[in-house]
Length: 113
Length: 111
Image 1 (cartoon, rainbow over the protein chains, first blue to last red):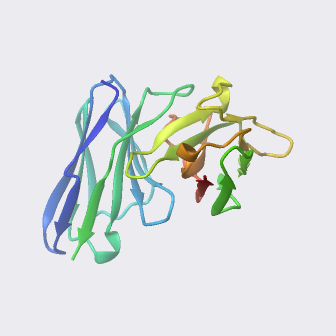
Image 2: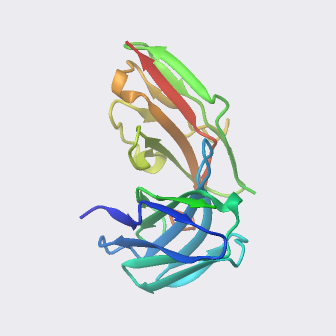
């Protein structure tokens, strides 16, 4: 299994809603990532988890809250989002450390209304 | 600060023609460079990375530290190469997925 699976594929939420994005991999990777990608723009790193601990938060607003409950799962909890947060949210995983490669999920297309 | 520059947003070539997608980077340490590709309606996937020195789908890329470049080349483009290509940079002491991406180049290979 060399896939990173993200659910849901699409999500529409209101600005007062609370929702969660989920990401799962069974490749034994101990580094997992959340990226945000706006239309026609490159992915931008949001968070990095290494061995289930948050190692990097790229100054992401607190309305985005990541969680890594175990080595296979990564969640992104969303609360009180703004319309400008609408984007494709990508999850990725890799072996920890260098000399490796990242595997990306298909993404969750989020629309905030 | 690290930065990746892909000067061409769009690149169009005819089938069978050579193609070169440019990538320049700025990084103070030892970088690890990658090319990712995203075909229509598919996920972002790694095409190649400089450290493995492989040729994937006929593409090659050489890291030129003097010119701080990592251009992607293919001698004979195919229609199925049409996609978005991202150059990405990761520090060699960090996790591979912690990458800074260039803005991407959309390659169209015409029949």
